[in-house]
Length: 115
Image (cartoon, rainbow, N blue to C red; front, side, top):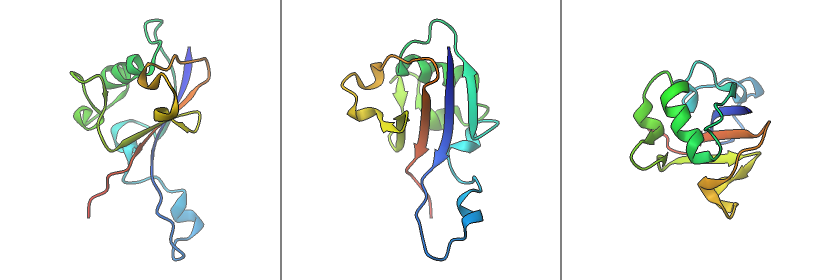
């Protein structure tokens, strides 16, 4: 099954930002992978979001694996917003047990920022 992944970040809009500054990735979940946007083909064993989190942790991330999730908890760390097809996973009745469908887009957005 093909799943689209987006390792994004939250923009805090300001009148002083130019459009080019809004499209330049930096400071978000994109630092954990080779690209801010990926399309992956998952193994048959990946059926739910929880399965996807574990798969991403073991096979997709290139650095800082512990920033994404605690493998013992089987969910992403607090401060990471998970959207499935632009909808917060917390509004789905099944939550992290949401069953993935071909072509779903799953976005991981860090809401934590230093500074």
